[in-house]
Each structure stands twice: as C-alpha cells, then as structure tokens.
Length: 448
Image (cartoon, rainbow, N blue to C red; front, side):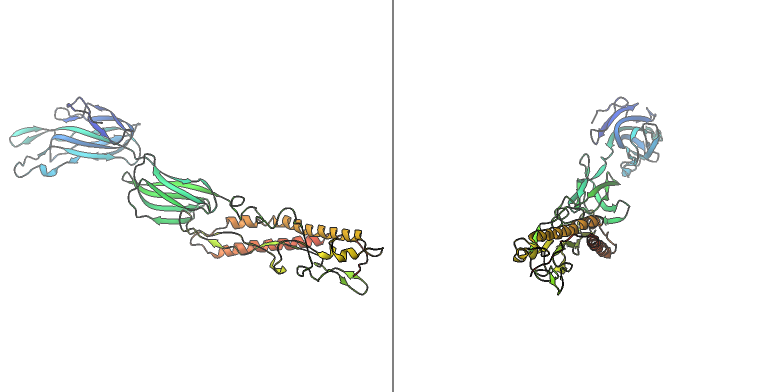
C-alpha cells in the first residue's frame, strides 16, 4: 500500500504481498531536529524484512540511524544501520557542504517474525553548513516483506508399490521461485543413496521422479528468499506380492504350484518314470514297482533371478531383483510341473483291464485301489512340499532384497543362492516326510 505523507501525521509504507501490513507508526514517519524521538512501527503478518528509505537533509560525517526489530515478546531479532543513499552527493566540488538528502537500510531476520521495529534518530541533529546552521530531517518510506513461503518436498504416492514410479516435487505454497542446489536421498536408517549437487536456475518447482525400490527419505537444498533452506520428504514402499504380475504369492509363482494338487497326467513315457511301461519289474518269483516307476510329482523351482538398477529418481543406482523366473525341475527332461501316473494303472489301459482275478491274481478292484493309493501318495508329495516351502519366504525375501550404491553387488547373488537352496532343501525334506508314511497297496499277482 502507498499513503501520502505529511510530516508527523501519516505513515508511508509499501508491502511485498498482502500477508503483511504496517499497523501504526509512532509518532509518524518524520524524524529530525524537530522530532528527535525514536520511531516505533507496529506490523502484522509474517514480516521478515523492513526496508527504510529517508528523504530530507542529514550530515554526511555523522550517523544515520538504526533499524531494530523485535518479536511479539519484545525479544530483539536483529538490527541494521542505515547507510547513505548517494555518498557522492556529500561534498561535490561545486558544493562541499558535507550534507546529503538521505540514508537507507534493510533489516532482514533469519529467525522469528518481526512484530515491532524501531528507527533510531540520526546524529547530529544540528550542524554547520558554511556560515549557516543546518537541521537534520528525514521523511521515511517503509517497505515490508513477508517471510518467504516455506519450501515443501512432497512425494506422490506417499506409499508406492515397489518398482512403480514415485514423484517427489518441491514447491512453495505461494508459487514463489527458488533455486535448487542439492538433492539427497537416504534409507530410513540413514544410509546415503543419492547425494547430488545441482546447477540450475530459479524455478517454481523441482520434480524428482523414478522407480521406487525401498522406503526412502528425501531432501532438497535450495536458495529461497536470499537464504539457503532445506525441505524434506519421504515415501514408503510396499511389496510387489499380490500387486504386480509375477509377485502374486509370498511363496509360490502365479501358476504351477497351486494349493490344490493338479489333475493326474497319464503317461507311458520315461522319464519321468524310472522304468518303462507298465512300470512293474517282473522277477522270477515276484513283481515289484521301484520308487518312481508308477508315479512322479514334478515341482516348480526358482531359477537365478536377474537384477536391475533405476537410473533416475531418489533410488537411482539401487540394485533389486526384477523378477523370479520359475521352471519345472530340470532333472525330468522337459516334463512340466504336475502329478504323473503310469498309464498301466489307468482303467482304460489294456494292462489294467487284463487283471481279472481270481485271487490271488489282481482284480479290477485291486487295480482301482492301487491307482487310488498312488494318487494319494503323489498328492501328499505336493501338499507336504507346500507346507515346508512356506517357511522359506523365498519370494518375500527376493522382493525386498536390495544393494545400495557403493555396496557389494555380490550380496544379490548371495541372497539368491541362499534362498533358492533353502527352497530345494524344503522339497527334499517334504519328499522324505512323504515316504515315511506307509501306503496300503493291495497284495495280489499281476499278469503281463
């Protein structure tokens, strides 16, 4: 605002925005020989800076007054002396009078809010000017500036699924410009991820975006309102499990290791069976079926996962596993995951149908019982393996694994090797447990 001035009666002030105002100026904005008292100004709003400019006549070889700022409790926040506006005007060759028209000064506080300011008088108030007597005078124009709107650094989304993009944006509430100088990101326990100096021009926002790998604190240092300021933010990363394709279950892949055992696949092919159709070894005085000759369960195993590193954003340079490649047990020559039974114990097979009794020869009922026990045995392999694997937390471990910039990348291989070996060991344990259960097979003689 601008107000006309008559010495001693009105205050004259301008403001940098409508959030601050000059409430009163006592005894006014005039000071000098006729009014030697300190001027007291009361302001409202977040005043951070008071600029004073005088117009009148003052002695050059004196002092010109001081601006002193106080907070609402009367605590002094700072002071600044007025200085000559135009020192060359003091004693020009054509008029060496040691007098000039005015002084000015700016008080800017780094902490606190100015609620009151004072302007102390100049000195001397009376002085010789050639063969006359001069009297000091100054009519002040006052400019108030509000505290710069704080710089904020906000990340969106605040909670982000791992590998999805997070965007951290620095802005001020009033849209004022700032000059970014430095970006830094750290883990929640304080380990540095990115620490980068910036060379940039004034802007109204700074955007820092990239894939989110783990929960991170971020901060930006910028020059705002003539001062360096730091704004901080953060984001939380949640698991890909159940959110992104390929990470749908904590312990198993999307498909291939369902809770319910798969349907039976009938086959004569070897492998997976240890001996060829019909799967029985006819001895001179007995008929036996070696382990794996009539039934086989093939499991899904994790292969070596590959890793990647973001090139942008707060998590740039952090290594993480891109995905978990799954494959059927390679020891079975390309057979897929599933439960396999020998075709000879299928009711439609000629070998099965040949078994017509009478006792002690096998009957059709005996063959049905044999197939049922075999199926139950292979289902037990499947369900027992799921139970033991559940304690490995393989996918959860690989999903959360990371290596920060500067750390040994071999840690990724160590994690992968350890957890995949634990997975394989769990299946071995499950198979052992399955074979410890006695299966009740029928006892009868088979015909070739």
